[in-house]
Amino acid sequence: MNRAAWPLLLFGAACASHPGATDPETAVTPMTTGFVAIGGTTNIETTTSSIALSTTLPVAPDSAYTLLKAAYAKLDIPIAKLDASSRSVGNEVLKVRRRLAGVPMQNIVDCGAKLGIANAETWDIEMNLLSFVSPDAKGGSKVSTRIQALGHDPLVSGRDLSPCTTRGDLEAKIGNTVKLLFVRK
Image (cartoon, rainbow, N blue to C red; front, side, top):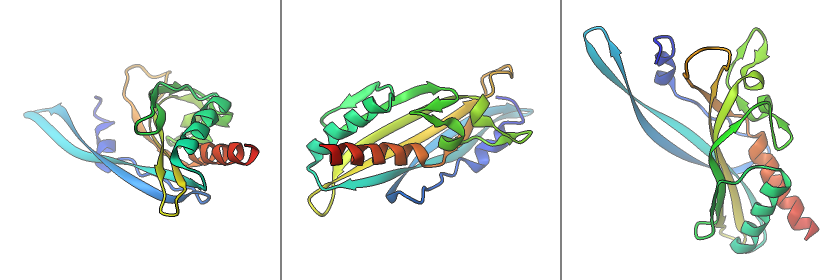
């Protein structure tokens, strides 16, 4: 890890919420990073958090799970993880550039900017994308999507990854697509 990148670890990645989403759930992942400095090794303990943005539907969880899988297919989001027992769909190592589900990357994640251009538009982005269905208190379902992302400038040598924060647009698009598929059903 280069010396310029390690201060980023001290601050972690703050996740943004989306105004159209409801009922966010937060998961905090602890992480320890070590780097070698003059005089020895130093460990920095940080946490990254991700917020799941949710959409509610007046259908049973199994029906909502079927709609969620159809939404991923409709949006052309590659599925690498499909677990019927936990009603989850996603991709733990999704590598994308420029667009996903028809949405420009700068609208999906914020990785900072350089010379007025959003880094998410020009960087390689690695995402952990997970959507899952759970029952809600009213007898329906809650469809939640959580994104964690890292970015890398392909023009810079090395593989230092910088944390990116979600803007909530992809989570909202997945939720809205599930709702649209429900209405058309």
